[in-house]
Length: 299
Ligand code: SER
Image (cartoon, rainbow, N blue to C red; front, top):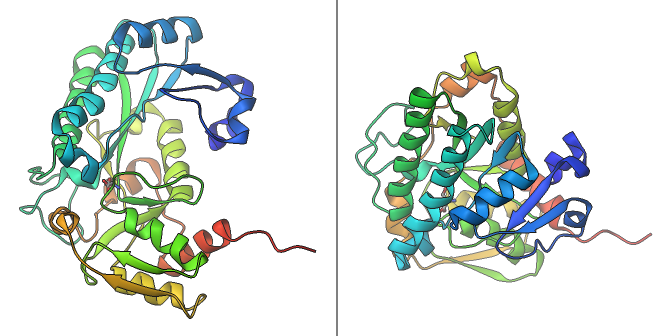
């Protein structure tokens, strides 16, 4: 929202969600309440606002999806399909839809997981992302719909609360460090996952959407790598700035999900096709997030 408002002007951005967006800057743009699973409601919204680009971000993440597989399937697929249909009918010119490293399963190579490899996810979230990617490619190839997508690693931001993901521990770690709490981590201390700051993810998304259409050769979804670390490595990196930070690992079912995902992603295709370069390494990521969540110093 913030990046689109800054780039295009708040008056040219329309926000929509199933409930109001609790951010002061949201008020600068028009907001329309909509359940994106309701095709008529979404069609009506699109007819009324005539957007050139739709960023369809509705999703239920991996851990939460396992507790309600059918609800996750509906939420992750229906809004995408309604938007693709609207684009097929000429109501929308461009679509962005997020995919995830969760498309990979245990039979994909762990390190620098290639763009093209086995897609056998173990979660309903991963199943819906693989299916969604194929629908995107189908609508592009069959109807010429300009839909673009990124397979994000775990995203770490400081502007909104984490919700239902397997990678959320990394967001919670910073909050715990700030509040002088011990982090109860539900992953094994040596579970390596690819991660990225929200800032890098937003920049990459806008860069992908700005690239000329003929450069976009992957119409399923692009692998994107930021930096990779384990809970142990993250704790040690945070301790450089917050020496008292402590973490206690008690792995639960989310560890099984994490264990089925890559250690790192090969994003050569994104680099070649639209110039992707991550900004933050692990130390840079930690510094960026700690600075973002720290309360301003008076005086
Ligand atoms: N961050 C997501 C999750 O943990 C993966 O893309 O579910």
